[in-house]
Amino acid sequence: LAMENSLRRALDRDELLLFYQAKVDMHRQRVVGGEALIRWRHPDLALVAPSQFIPIAEESGLIVPISNWVLETVCLQIREWQDRGISPAMVISANVSANQLHQPGFVGHVRNALTQAGIAPECLKLELTESMLLDHVDEALVTLRELRALGVKTSIDDFGTGYSSLSYLKKLPISELKIDRCFVRDLPDNEDDVAITTAILALARALSLDVIAEGVENQAQAEFLMAGGCHIAQGFLYHKPAPADEFFDFVAHFN
Ligand code: G
Ligand code: G
Ligand code: NA
Ligand code: MN
Image (tube, rainbow, N blue to C red; front, side, top):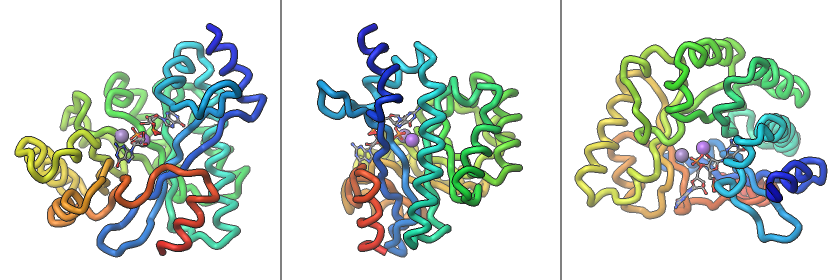
């Protein structure tokens, strides 16, 4: 409860911040996007990782104002980077929580954040998890259709770790599958992971979905993925999550 109370005050006290991690086209050697990852600069603690406070935010309902802050901050950050010369083709992702996706005003809030920042909807991507979509598939379908009509991209995060039903996947209007890092870690030696990633890549191709691999840490993983047709990667091999200004400098040097 102490944690909940300090989290409640964290928003007002500007203790929350976003780090960004680059998404790289390994083939063209270009940064093509980034993912916003929340951090909490607690006054008495080191930087607190989301795994330590997102669950508390979810249980307490604080996830709603926090998530809205994330959306607004990401959109304003995109605006600022574009003003400083970053290409509008650079797509920045924000993570969406289950509670947030199923809030009645969710799509309206996304629209407001875009309008307030004055950025094109195509510059924003929302990362959703499989379970979030499939636990309430009818509501999720409505929301995804509205997001697609708005022009915002969507990705299924941690793909392969949930109980994804392929028939639902076909029905859901999403833009991208994001291969979970647990399947990438032991590539290319682990036969099961080779089989799973190969199957996900074939699935993405068959459904004309974009695909990204998460947790790419070494060249052998990168080469296996590229050979299989997965050109976009996010991982420590290229970049670790960093404050906004460091992300900007990284892109300026890399691209
Ligand atoms: O940033 P890692 O570095 O620790 O992030 C861990 C997890 O925290 C991510 O996989 C993601 O699911 C979650 N996360 C990060 N940022 C956000 C956010 O802004 N909102 C929500 N709901 N989850 C986030
Ligand atoms: O939302 P999601 O769980 O997909 O967020 C990405 C998470 O993966 C973040 O916690 C981020 O710090 C982590 N991550 C990104 N790249 C790597 C990597 O190369 N190795 C490891 N171990 N973690 C990574
Ligand atoms: Na994510
Ligand atoms: Mn993930």
